[in-house]
Amino acid sequence: MKLKPLKYTLYIAISLTLIACRTKEYYSINLQFQNQSDTSMVIEVFPKDPYIIAPHYNFYNINFDHPENTPNGGVDKILYVEPTHNSRAILVTANMDSEPIYLINQMFDSILIFFESNDSLIFKFYPDSVANYPVNCFTSGKSWQLEYTDHPAPCTMYCPNEHYYITQYIFMISDTIIH
Image 1 (cartoon, rainbow, N blue to C red):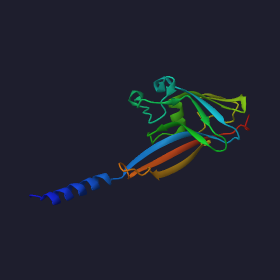
Image 2: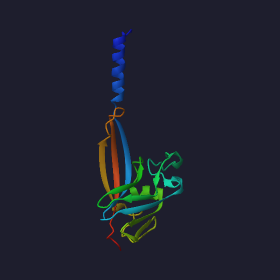
Image 3: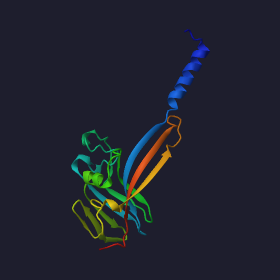
Image 4: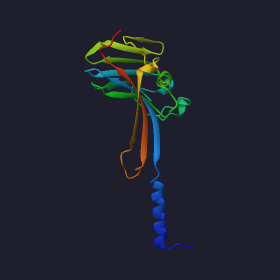
């Protein structure tokens, strides 16, 4: 079949449009700590060796089966969270079959949390114990609040049909709970 130049150009334009209009879907799980206090909160994470990229750690798109295949790049091991219900992700992964306890135990040796207004109050979380807080984020699955979000990606010329589905597990921290 011989196409004339105008028909050929139209055929190419329609083909490219159809290819570009496909919807891409992305799924991820985020582990977050939410600040329930009136003052800024500081989280210091201690990741396991495979996830350390000195002086940072790799918190995005973690591949727990093959840590060496996790993309390079990272964030500081000290994270700041503004007061009054702001939260901060400590881990993002596409391992959709995982529970928060499994994820946090795979990734971290320990987590310390303190508040800028009272740096003598330190919550210490370890896989087998917790200090100054009533529940342990490493062992208490019921303490993680589950939220689902889905939203389209910011509209751009190159990826107008991307959609993100995010499962968020949120561990709430208050500076008034000490047991």
